[in-house]
Length: 491
Image (cartoon, rainbow, N blue to C red; front, top):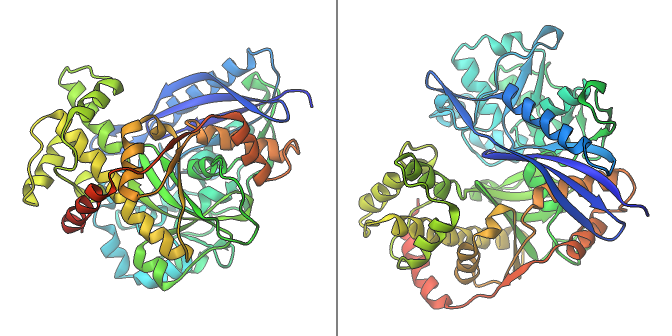
């Protein structure tokens, strides 16, 4: 086939990028044509996303792609989950979307359980309990007497907002819809009765569209003649599509797990069907939609947010350290000296992450990290041990051993954490590709165009296209001792 090009608009919680993928029938090559910073805006103590600024960047990136010699066949947008925008009468945007770390959902779980039990919420949604899930954001708005829910006529998740701005067509893409905690994975549709129990509106929910849906052409004024095709619009769904795993048969559980590593770490298994059981509830795992009709049975873990926030705080104080500086400092620090629970509330949105890490160690009777390298090493060692803990849960749910851990995403560039994960977990780690989310987005567009026959074939293309690095487990006995200490301080 002649080379075809697709454009992925891959927007993460801290940055966004426009990546062109050129597919020659065997391999796909990537070219980043635009990049921008992303993050929350604090407005009088409330965290929002700056949608108009994001939209400006999306348009600028499309113009950059339009200037290339290779014609772009289609465009797709992926972002994080749970956050949303509301449209009122005449499709008027009702304010900037809230950021999932906004404090208005603090304490909301306890309030929710007084209305509907935790068990009933789970068995209607199959989702893990995180205070920022969309249903709890809705409930916080209701309890806070926000006028927006009353005025809303449509709800669009973040990538759905951008697809609407690109085409004028409203859609609710499947993989992101499943992050709301009001999608029923067993019945395969919105959990309307659950929303009714909370007294939340249901008429603003539209039909759910699967990945691969073609929404039609870009609006003329955007300067590019291309169709808009829904990828797995939840960034983790796209990242997992790009896992370069071989084998696996339809209907059978693969013997590998994934770890999509960035600001968040999403660790789990690809299941052929939803698993809504007492054990999944007990382990607080989640059933999120994947591409090709699969289910991402996974757990959210606080990821490199810990490191990102330390760097932000230190650079605010004038350090001006880049990522390589941090890597050198952490590599020079003593290993397995102190540990934190990365998912403790202390680390959700602290003003001073380094001090939050020190305070946790002080409170739990451990050696307090005495310099920046020790703080970083504490965070990285703790993440590796958390991955070991979640790996044991994955094996329990899979009903058999996990032989390989596939790490994808930007976190693969942290070689120290990749090696620590292999050693802590006692499993080989296959790291790569780095741009997994953009790659999965692009490959879904190729599948939708008929240029790639299946998800399995798409993964073969990924294996042909990108080098991976394998980390073998070593020094596992020392990590066994560390794990016992980590479990003692974890909640």
